[in-house]
Length: 393
Ligand SMILES: [Zn+2]
Image (tube, rainbow, N blue to C red; front, side):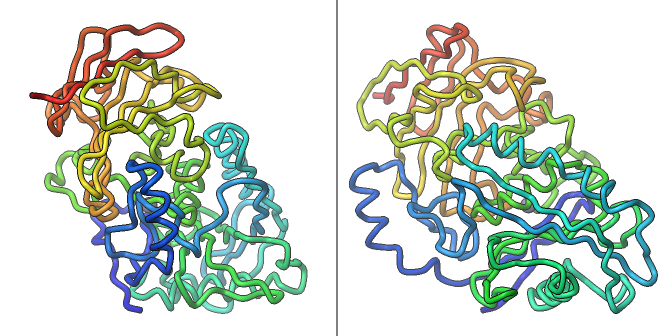
């Protein structure tokens, strides 16, 4: 296994470690899934730890349905003692469970069990380096923190962890996810492949930070650009998906942080029968709002073996309550494209005039031509958006 790091251009954007390797022996299972549904994309980006594709998902990633218990351990440092109580620290991430619950339609219960105690690390914070340069250093930091709490905590019933720090008194800029493909952290005879540590960016992002990092441990990728082409423009790193999905924009005032339908389908939060995968020359379909339980949530058209076009319906409901414009959202998913390089691209693109993609959802009469398809909204009500998707002749 070798390690490389995404080049970091904005200190407040959180990162995940890149670990290369193979996705594991899921090929046959995937081929069967693909035969049944050609919109199920393979793990094809060459990373090994996370992917926008994968049916089944990468083996080591966290369970995405049912109740997953997580131990929340709080640490501080000789040179950076916590200045808030453990209870105050936990307040920062309390909303995480409800956000997962909403986006999974009640299917995923991320149950956090905090131990309200600051454990003092053995070295100064400046001697740890959770952002790099290696996976081993990141792992060693988290392992020391968790082992400090081991005498007080039974880890044997848990599948995830969060190492929490005082975000206003820690020198780490970003708390990357721990999403190992091997070398798990072992506590109480239990192997932990998934968890996260927090850093100063928790103060910026709030609880949605934890949803973002933990969603990496569910196997999903970064949707913001890992490199800025224009460092004078903050929104340049959002050039692929604007403010759609907190795997792109993590800011708490984002108008549409809800995960995409494709992401929710991959996690098992949307069922196969809620997705229309079509190769027809033309289809007209009502798509119900993504934030509501039940109904058809997306029409997907396969383009290549790794690429699909997706149409879903967004409304200002729940986590997307600040949505600027309702309508049918169109995007391309390509599972051969790595995290940070645009594995999802929302259309239409108008990064100059609308860098947050506020106007991207299509209203009645609006259309998009993309990947040989013409996608037009022919009706829009509170029950959803009716779209006609036709192949260009
Ligand atoms: Zn990330």
